[in-house]
Amino acid sequence: MNKRFILLCLGIVALSFFKLNAQVDLADPLMPVEKKPNFYIGPVLGYNKSMHTVELKTFAQDPLCPTFVDGSNNGFFGGLSFEYLLGEAETSNSSIIARFLYNNLPASMEQNDLDLPTRVISINGRDTVETIEYTSIVHKNEVKYDLVTFEVMYKFNPIQGNGLGLTVGPTFDFALVKTQTQTMNLVRPLNAQFRRDPNADAKGYKYTNNDRTIVIQDGDIPNSSAFRLGLKFGVQYEILMKGGMYIVPAIFYNFGVTNLNSDFDWRVNALQIGVDLRFSFISLF
Image 1: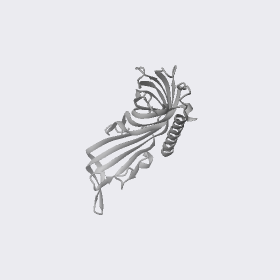
Image 2 (image 1 turned 45 degrees about the horizontal axis):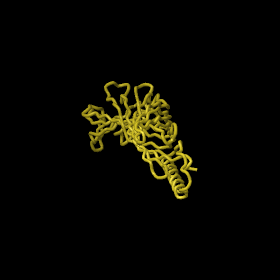
Image 3 (image 1 turned 60 degrees about the vertical axis):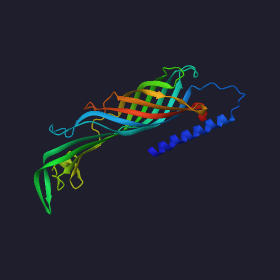
Image 4 (image 1 turned 180 degrees about the vertical axis):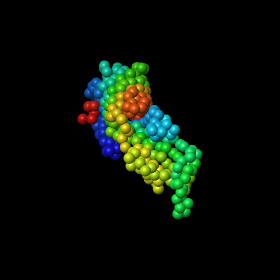
């Protein structure tokens, strides 16, 4: 899916460049200059630094077990943007920008248990002995969170004739993937493995890596919402290129208003850095 999306964006850019160059070459210098268009369209690509703010018990039924506190990871976004300039295009300093995006906002959470007395099975040659050892255990929780996003932003250029712009507006996100994989990994001692829980199947646990890893959860996040409402604000700069094309680098902060999970205060925020390529609508046809 990601490869198809990238190829689509590259196709739009190539088509637009071809149209713009053809118009410049065939222009008659004796003809009057056409009025600047109000409507622009183009691809969007960018980087997400996603940040999940939450406190999750590794085992909800055991208050002594460690707690995952927040998590972050690297993601991406991409799609199409539409801009409509308000007022006369030549003097306009504000616009409405709408975007349809695919957003990837993952998170990685980790907690360590060091020198913790744990009941394990020690392996000495061919013999196995159930005993209590001081162990080092790493708890991990890998969250996948992919969304389809529609956002509407108001842009204002505070300095007339300058490309600097301030933007703000809501985002409406619909989750395509919202899963987590929580594991418990035995780091040391090396000659040991977890003692299998007789009720593992009922609890949904799985043992891997020669019983040195327990998969605690692997699937959809329980009681998670398919809808996310966000508030996005940031700064952009418009660079006018040949033929009326704009390159618009921008940086945003995307604040999650709603919770990912109804049981916890679990918000997903993101620092987003990207670039829009915008072409006049008429140049594409």
